[in-house]
Image (tube, rainbow, N blue to C red):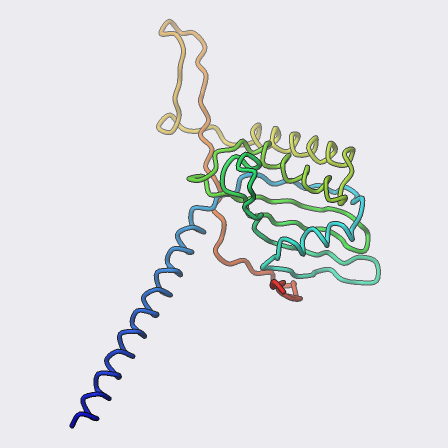
Length: 218
């Protein structure tokens, strides 16, 4: 009888532990989903500039331990690679002006060209200007040797032009979604544009991309 009671007690303890583990895992998944839902596209630019060193860029990305790496359009002359990772938190709390961004880079490792940059941030934890985030990332690429200072200036110039063109082509808000200021005597009025951030998709797929590998810490 005592053996039966002991086994029953052990079985109950195991069930409690399993239930606790399931609860912790579920909460962790829910929190991750909530964090990713708050991620918004902060800045992006079509670069089309040469890299100072493809090898230095690859080493920089390996240190970031990217969770997504796939290659498309691979042939004898080009190999387009897309990498997504989260910038690490550092002791320099002012580096990013808040929580570090999530970054996606696309580059041609054969031609040595940087094609595209996108940055996402949690706006509840980071209120830095878009241009400041882009400049901080490019400065990191210059320090690691992937870009030269001149190449960085070229990318920033392209980013500023794209941002200006985007602002000029964005539809004006309706009267219900805009704020107007001016004189009541028929004077000119000015509209205050409201920018709607683009949400970061929780999953991204590429019909032609082939996942190569995931970097994991050694």
